Amino acid sequence: MGSCSIVQWSFFSLLWLQIATGTSEVSVKNLRESLEGPFGVTRHQTANPAGKAAARRHIIARFEEYGLDVTVQNFNGSTGAPDKPGTNIIGVKRGKMNGTSDDRIVAVGAHYDTFATTPGVDDDGSGMAAMLEMAMIMTSCTQQRYTVIFVAFDNEEVPVSATRASNTPCDISRGADDFVCSWLLPFLNTTGRPAEFQGIFMLETIMNYDPRPNVQTLPAGFNIFFQPLYQKLQAAEFSGNFITLIRKPEEEELVALVNQTWEDRAKEPVGAVNHDVQVPVPGKPSVAETTTFFDLVGRSDCLSFWVQDPYLRCVFVTDSANYRGSMQQCYHKSCDNVTSITPDKLNFLAKVTDAILQTTMKLAEVNADTCTKVTSAATGLHGTWFIVMLLSLPAWIWSILQYSCTPHVI
Ligand SMILES: *[C@@H]1O[C@H](CO)[C@@H](O)[C@H](O)[C@H]1NC(C)=O
Ligand SMILES: *[C@@H]1O[C@H](CO)[C@@H](O)[C@H](O)[C@H]1NC(C)=O
Ligand SMILES: *[C@@H]1O[C@H](CO)[C@@H](O)[C@H](O)[C@H]1NC(C)=O
Ligand SMILES: *[C@@H]1O[C@H](CO)[C@@H](O)[C@H](O)[C@H]1NC(C)=O
Ligand SMILES: *[C@@H]1O[C@H](CO)[C@@H](O)[C@H](O)[C@H]1NC(C)=O
Image 1 (cartoon, rainbow, N blue to C red):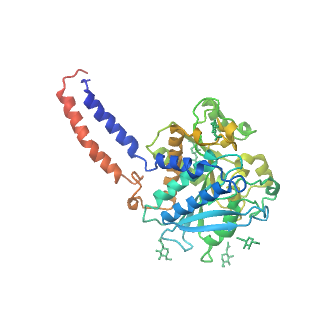
Image 2: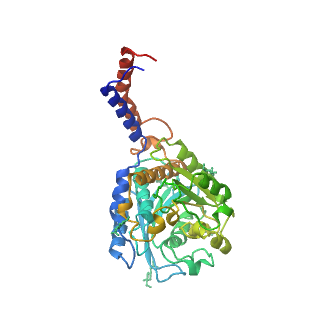
Image 3: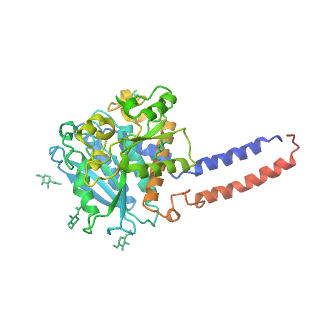
């Protein structure tokens, strides 16, 4: 090897830096600002109504700024919880097929309320930060075939155990339930012939990356029902370096697409993997299934979709919340706060955001060439990528010339 000068090395480093930051359009800075801003304080109707109202205003303002069609859905609570009024915020990005029965609608959701005793940075400020970032990027695109819905749910954190037993559609008492029954079903059926619902990605507590060994715990019975995955986690020394996609057999294709996107993307700031947890029973969950697999089937807003007839697809995307690392102590507690944010966790959150964003764009057939904030879509090199390549060209040429001019031994 020829000896490289300091200047030459700095060119190489610069080149590397350009590649490393040029592959993703998801901004870690934006994610951090969301988490340190409206999603870093308690958002609960009695414990901190002002914090919840501020978050709501923030979401509405952002959705409007991004040019989404915004609906503020006030509800009085479902039959299961008539005394729990709340407000979902819905932002629609219409595709070319909007308003026809040929539309194939796809959605992304997260909940903006918190449990009374926590600032809820991971649960679920992380999901909200990710969703707003996706909405911002996707609205920079001018051509898409199918409609995309972004929805910020209220009242995910309400007790549901008393009413879940019936597993009746529209009787689960969460905001997601009111969204599905009073808004989504009529929306799908605007023409009198229901449009297809491709599914919703439910972003539920998604930033707690913790690669240390022995930080991942699991719900009771996991080692029996999900043995192959359990063995993988065991072989990885129960490290908390993964995101989980919890779903039923109906979401096979959605998860396969997330998998592909996850692997395609060059951006790998942290050694994160994804795991697919398929609850084996297809269709509407029975009471027994919800009880047996409560942590997988019963605890997230996906239940409001899965209990419908016809079934509505939902993928529950999560870091496993109280089953991992510091969240074993901080789940629903004051220490799920802004001091827990680290660069690694933000990078992990960015990677998850990016994978779900790209998957949603594929499902909605967004033409990436029409986006101003997508820098390296799967369709090829263009936009910022091209500029990055162009800018690094002199560095390459100079390095090659320098190399061939310097005496070297191999
Ligand atoms: C909620 O209840 C109040 C009082 O009964 C009623 O005026 C209001 O229209 C209801 N809102 C919705 C969204 O159902
Ligand atoms: C929505 O559909 C109408 C026709 O029904 C069409 O004129 C309009 O351009 C569509 N909107 C978008 C954003 O594609
Ligand atoms: C859709 O709307 C039509 C006409 O209003 C109605 O007959 C049909 O039952 C609806 N379908 C569903 C699944 O709601
Ligand atoms: C997704 O990837 C995970 C991890 O590689 C794998 O175990 C799972 O079977 C894949 N799922 C699908 C539907 O492709
Ligand atoms: C935030 O969490 C840290 C622990 O991670 C704790 O020391 C601190 O007291 C918490 N702050 C508040 C305001 O509760």
